[in-house]
Length: 254
Image (cartoon, rainbow, N blue to C red):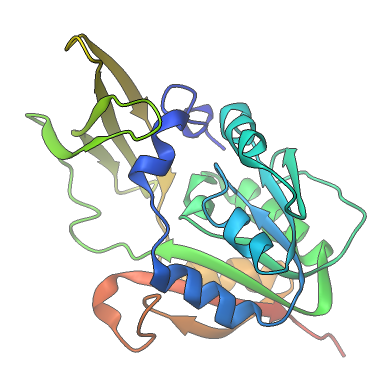
């Protein structure tokens, strides 16, 4: 995983930028079902972790970013959540889980084949025999693969209710490596305090995009197979959302 994907400068803005929709939460609640042992890889600040725990699930939450895990820990009250700072390619928990989640496009942060396979092998090793894996990916549409360089574009402006500061997010553009299937988007968060003093916080990510047949092959090599693919959180038949929500289980070897 690229060190540029740890959000060292912008973790405090993650919740402003990634609110959990009711449709997304309802999707996970429906797919997970009754109270389960859940492992979430790339939990971030707990946008999904905490709502799942509040619904009775026992959640182990892993993230490599110390900033993200710190924010999650600061939110915890009495929820059944175990936050762990670890790499999702090399963790060992000595426990099996009914459901393993890789939400929020986290899998795209695994740049190399070795990282991708290692992560999926860890998932297989920590999954109960009848367990379910949910992996959310974005589809490699032409707009995704189009390089965007030039004038920064403001994406949104909100008031952070916790600090009272105005935060503006800017898209600084992205570079694309079609051969390696890599995207390097850059963003900036401008913060205005009560005296209109501005501070800028930049983040430069590196993401690997996938073709669907690659995903199938990776899962198969790790002993997993796709049992269902949805295309949005609200309507699984709607292909226009440009998602792949992979539902997978362990391959039963004879």
